[in-house]
Image (spheres, rainbow, N blue to C red):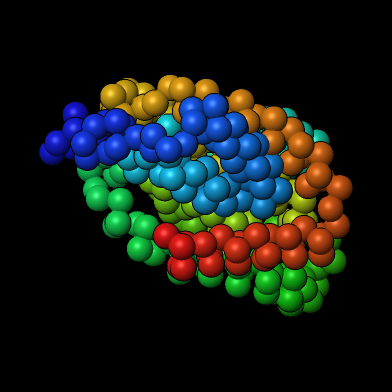
Length: 281
């Protein structure tokens, strides 16, 4: 066990159960939150900002809520990635270069969660979300400028060596962040890739779905091995069911959005997530 003391158990004096809320209502609300999280994770990202506060509302300790959510949300990533399989196949080479960094980052982030206080990363979440939203907003202009400078017209032209290095380092660091907490990890990946690559937004979204799923999957396996006592398997099941269904719906919706609509959706949901963190956390 990597904590100095075990996390509080739901129902104990340090973590009282919300007796005023019926169990059936709790189950339905968690399922609904997981469905919405799975859907927006595929389309945009930041689904953790829906499920994590929901679990806290019902009295689950932060560590238990974070770990159980990380495991359950993998189902939504898998179903969403399946929905984007055509776009993923078109960018298989780039994806294979990025996957090892997400694996290592997710593992490092999960281990950090077990040894550091949650406040260590949560304090910078708002700044990271703002950075991601800015990158998403300015990406079209940056891409056009890069294409004009290089005399390129193809939307999938290869990035320069410096941009490629920035992409690799950024994906690795975002993997660490995702394994630790993961709120708005998808927005940050979309922002980074929009800024440093010439890929279309739909292809970026497809890659984002795979990378975030890998990070969550690696973190989930780490938690199951290193901290099984902090997993609430009922919560995992509820979130897995809701998120998987939401991921299927999200993929159908996301693939039909135009680049402009998808970008606006990312900015709107990201801003709402930022407001929730800053004013209601």
